[in-house]
Structures are given as C-alpha cells and as structure tokens.
Amino acid sequence: MRTHYRRPAFTLIELLVVIAIIAVLIGLLLPAVQKVREAAARSQCTNNLKQIGLGMHQFNDTVGHFPIGQYNDDNGQWGWMVFLLPYVEQGNLYNVLTSSASADRVYIPANMGGGPNDNVGGNIDNIHSVNATYPVGRCDTNTAVGPDAVKTVIKTFLCPSNSLPAQKNNGFGATHYCGNMGNTSLWGATSFSCGGVFGDKNNGILLFSNNNTQTWVVKITDITDGTSNTFMVGEVTTTANVTPTANTNQFPVWAGGNGGGCNGTTSLGQVLRAADPAFPLNGTSDMSFGSKHTGGANFLLCDGSVRFISNDVGTTPVYSAAASRNGGESLPLP
Image (tube, rainbow, N blue to C red):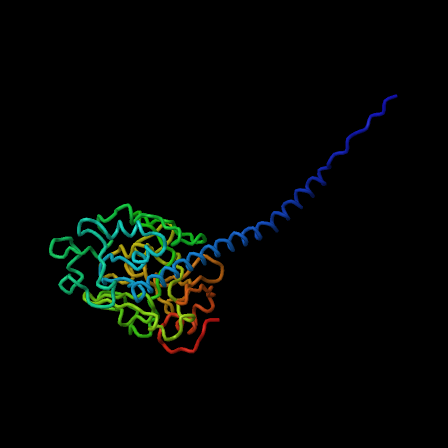
C-alpha cells in the first residue's frame, strides 16, 4: 500500500506573524537608511563648502582680497559667486559672462573691487543701460549676456539635502549657499533699502559693497577675530518668501540679485545673509541662514574649514560673534 503524506503549510496565524515581523524589520531599517542617506548628503554639502573655500583662498592669493559680495545697491547686481567661477572649475562659464564682444557683459570693477568704480563717471548706475560711453560691462543680471549661462546648474553650489529646486522659476541657476555680510551691530537698523546698509557698515566677509561710487572688500588681515572663528559662507534654504513652489525675488541664485529696485531684502537675500539673533539660524526671515539638515546648518569658516552650527547656537551671542570679522569677541565657536 502507498502512503500519502500531506505537505506542511503555513497557517493563517503563522503567515500574519511573518508579515508582522517583516513590517517591524522594515520599520527598524528605514530610519537607519534615512540616516545614512542624510549623512551622505551632509558630507556632500560639506565638500561643496570646502571647494568654495578653496576657491575663495585661490581668489585671495591671486587678487589680494576676497570677492565683493555685491557691487550695487539698487538693481539686479552680479554677486560674488560669479567672480569665484574660475576657481571652482567653471572658467568657461566665467568667460562667457565676462568676455562678450559687446558692452553687454559682466562689469568688473577696478582691481576686482576695493575702491572707486572706474570708467563709469564715478557712478555705477551709469552702466545699467548699455551705451558707447561706458563700454565696460553691465552691473545687473537682467541682460542678454549669456542668457543660457546664467541658467547653468552648478552642482558645487547645491546641497543635496535642500528642498529648493536647482533653478529659479525664471530659469536662473540656484545656489544653496550665501555669503556672510556680518551681524547688525554696526548697522543702526535692519534695513537694506537704497541708502541703507553698505559695505562700510558690514562687519562680515562678503560685503554689500556699493554706494554707487565705492566698493569695499575684505583681506585676510582684516579678520582680526581669527579665521577659525569667523563665518565666510553659510547654507540657505526655505524662508518666509522662498519655498519650492513660491520661489520669488528672494530666491538665492548664484549669478546674483535678479530682483531689482530699492525694496529691502528682495535683492539682497539672494546673495548675502546676516547672522545674529535678529536673523536666527533657520529662522523665517529672508536674511537668515538655514538648511534642511537635522538640527542646524553647515558654515564655511575663513580658514577653509567647515563647521556644523546647531540651531541652539544660532540664537546666541556666539552666533553674532562668528559673523563679525573684527568685533573683538572672546566667544569661540563650540
């Protein structure tokens, strides 16, 4: 006689137990995967800032000072990242923007800044409109100069963790890093309108430098608080008027402010930010630094190192002290 054996099978309860175990394992695994992914993104962001830092010091070695932050006070002015392009492996892009055969190109001030504007009748506003009288380039980004060039997406200027798109809604290439113009201790007011805060009152590194006739720049020797205690560049992300879907005039772009007019932070926050309790880290102000990293943001210091600053520090006098290059504060970064 032939014996028949019934194959063992999972009961419904056993199947449910297995599914529950798999669900628990997935629940335990996902946070770990997310942490690894965020760690990789944060590491890439750190490397981006280090690359920017190397470019800054190469620029300083070549020119004798750091770049101008912005060189005009009331139009869509070119920003410091344009002048940094040759030092972050974007020399061809820089040539497109500065070597146009016409006057419709980036304006380069005398000695790359640090004195009066040259060949423009003493007033940079004279070159807003291209004409034969001042064939030295334009100071605003709303031009026909390399129309595709300003839309270039530069990965070194983008943090993988950021939720902002790689291009502004007008096509301009975005940046997730802005220059430190200082804290508000010397400003007398937190206004950025025309006739307001200029480079002579900025105590940071990359300065809002023009009053139509003069530019201000910073040298290594000007950083008397110590290069290891002073911010140069920090991360920026969503703010009150900047979101992934509402990327208005305050949206940070590497080419520079493409807002225009004497309208407060509309132009300035695209290129430069401030660091003190008036503009706390990861605050809603369009002048605040911030990131999508958990708990804080990365900052490039003037010695070329990168530090992660926590949100708790970003509301304290230590944060203000790190924004100032020459305040004499004895408040080293934690």
